[in-house]
Image 1 (cartoon, one colour):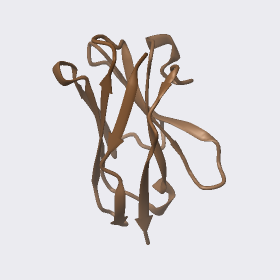
Image 2: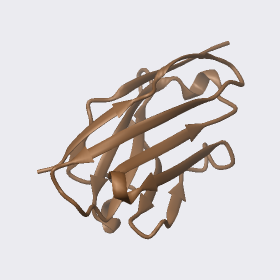
Image 3: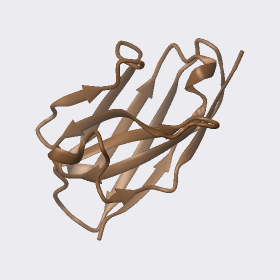
Length: 119
């Protein structure tokens, strides 16, 4: 079993930045970790993912603005959010699982952290 705990959400103005963190526990090796988000009134969607070796994948809507990274020694994944827009307002969820399930979501989810971008 894997437990994921996110932190770093908050309220920011348009154009601002935030850094989300997610700490995993319960398993020493997780092949892929990533972030999803659920915007108000919409379904949960893929944002970014990173493999154990550091290979990254991004949704088109965040390419060039968001950066995912991970510290394997600390079992932690980060999401740097830059140039935030009101449409980025969402609950952001950390996810963990296999490489094959990066875009669909692995079996482990965090509780979510709210990001609100004011216009």
